[in-house]
Length: 135
Image 1: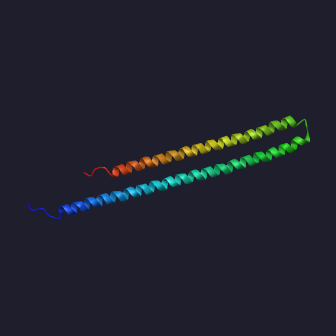
Image 2: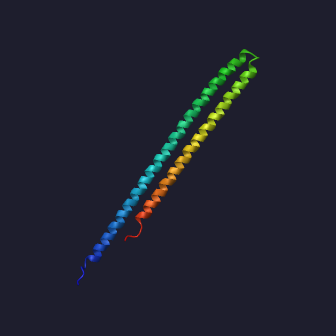
Image 3: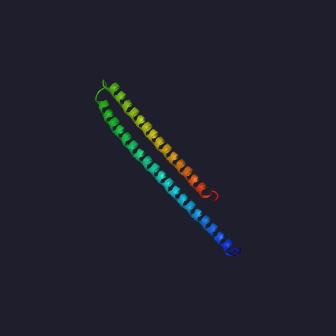
């Protein structure tokens, strides 16, 4: 039985083509993961900006109310204790708003971290499956 002298060359070319195909697929997986990570980071940035605007509006509203309360304070000494209590409550409300904002940002950051971790886990599994021995 005569063997084809071109057979080893054909097998080498086929193996090279398989490795090249897997390398292209691996680069495609990396590009997809990179795109997802960038999308998550953009979402985090947008959420952070949104929280900043919300916090600024709440603080500004509290400041306007504090000024109004301050003007009312001048009108009478008898109302001074009550006005001080309301002003304190407004400042307390501002502190609570900032705390809520920080909590929302923390939840968003944790979610983004989990999404990024999941992306890398999926990527690692896909790349590993690419390079399992051929049978």
